[in-house]
Length: 442
Image 1 (tube, one colour):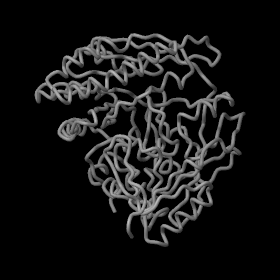
Image 2 (cartoon, rainbow, N blue to C red):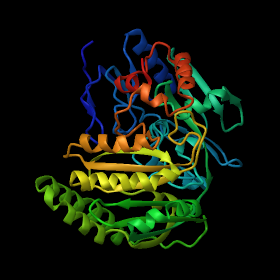
Image 3 (tube, rainbow, N blue to C red):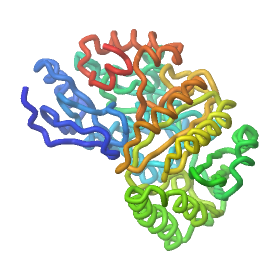
């Protein structure tokens, strides 16, 4: 069937497709009808989210399902701090939706453009060794299966529980099990974060990494290649009524928009034209970023405005492996004399029991590498991936990698259990696409 939809591309410009058609359902029933119609036409169907995955996980060559018509709070249990959200709700909408209820996500990543279903389905996470990724916050969800039927999995706000045995698969399902139409989350009362951002010697940070991730509520750092400095971020959780001392609006604009985006974009473009200047620019970036101390509501601290387009690969490692792995990457960059303009980001998360979670069964550290979108990342990413695989690494499902099902099966003990659930809920592979065939097999 000829493609008639508009050409779609993801935010990182790593994936593009022209769907056969695009549908924008405004109700759960319309999602069911779309799934049945796609199956009847012999087409696959995928929910696209906000397009913030760097992999092809949301690529929809058949029917592209755009869920912006399914947004908002559907149910709320005040006593248990539980909320059911429609799947197309964007993370950036949550402060306005949850704030009046006195609730917040326990943890967040640093980007909030994604839809809630997309972020959960790809394994989005923040940092903090006492907390898991976003998917660990799910107590229940509803999805449309391959035959167009609705299936409730887990618990809703009323306390009813069904199909609980499927929750470890469905919480982080890669879009392979069905179209999620709502999710029920276990939230926490609104809270405040004190943020301390400081430049510190890289070796000192690596030497203390395990201790700091264990003692801090949230700890992460960035390292610009060609420098000896880490930019550390330590966030401490405070009660919701704690006094606020936020970054003044003009300073935030200068720090995040003028320096962090506009100036940095210009420097990256200069680096593309004259790669030899990148080490000097990295040392400059090192000097003009970081060194802040402020206190604000959690979403304002967790998330950052990012408009400089890039490509990213991120690997989860057993926590203790992180310092050695980062040293190996640093040595690799020096040996190859690569000029890398984007920093590496290092975070941590608690072990969980979701079958395809990058933190399944182990406390995990994360190393993310990036390249400006006008630079070819493949040689760099493949070489870093080899290092990460040597440390038992698992790739983030929404970020670039080169693994296949045979390789991934070796690092996920419940891989075949997940495939069995997929066989049950989507035997005809109506939700498949090239990426899922790569990472899960046919």
